[in-house]
Length: 195
Image (cartoon, rainbow, N blue to C red; front, side, top):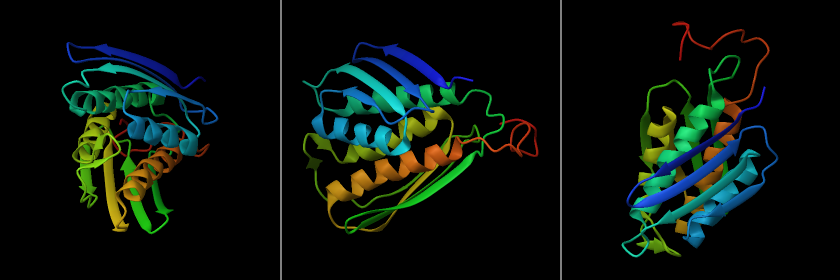
């Protein structure tokens, strides 16, 4: 069964096309117009072994807000669509990922109830052209677009680049774990019978 999904979303502020194959090999074709953000999405694809295409035309003459937030919304939507009915998947995933001096924990639940727990301590205004306050907005948008419970916690770290990159990679590893199939799960992993 293919777990490939495509979503296109056009507004007055952004035009976004995203395709995602959960069972890929880590190939990425990313162009958001924000170099460091592209770097993070490339790392997300590579370390989660997702095939990911993200093509964005946003109002960067304003700032990065709409581009990053709307990309998060669409990425969340495409994750939810690619996962499908959730039958047979593990549902939960977590990763504690080191990135030099940074150590980041990500835990998520594909439960259908959106929530973001966020504890990354970023103390610079920007990394490259990425406004650091937009990291939280991105993950918030992903969690709501995907209808997932998502927690990111910084256990260690002082370098903003390492902290952010660790968060994206930990998220990719946790999502890869949560979307894996387990032959012992015959329907959905829930006492309610639905997710």
